Image 1 (tube, helix red, strand yellow):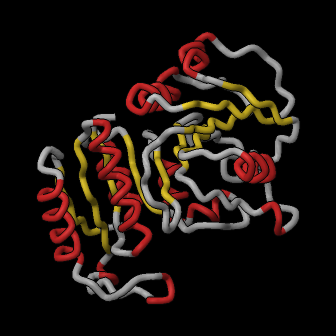
Image 2: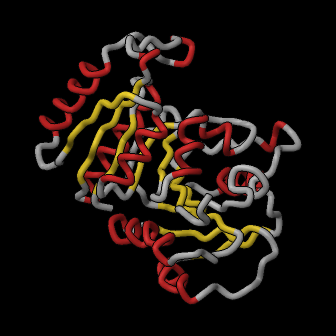
Length: 265
């Protein structure tokens, strides 16, 4: 965790996510780049106040926050970029052309499943980027990372580097890490997952493999500061999480979620 990208859209949600990114970068001793992407149609940057947006000049908005961050945290290396173009395309290009190894961004909030919870931009980033994405829900206040829930059906991944962010979090924060094993899969963990097993403190098995139900139920009983999941091509946003059957099944996680890069799309 050496270089964090923090996309902002000038909304209240992205402001809170930026605060989280700042604290995470400080704790990890990482560089931080704040990014705002805009299209020609949105050059004036006028958003609907219904979604928490107001009319702002993006450069002034970002420069004001960069100045505050530099003044308050002079030890943090922070930069910013304002780029014309589709936000997902811009962020993908930045990921491909820089040494960024984590994206921290805001999300939509409660939804029918993880896809609607994330919102279109965060969901698209998770599907297409080759680095982990940490999504911060609305109104979440950073307060360190003491407890982590790692929810997975299995630990089979194409590359051992997929699980490295959890090892980094363990090294930086030394949190209690709880593995939430979903479903009935009882195959032994692959060799590449052994380093992860060494830092896991407890394992809880849920026979119910419905992601929404299991996560909502478990997190209603177990306090955590971070949820980790692995992106799976076949169903990360569809089959694995599944369509909801009742309103009670809504994905309503109120803590940051770190999505690790599993299968490639």
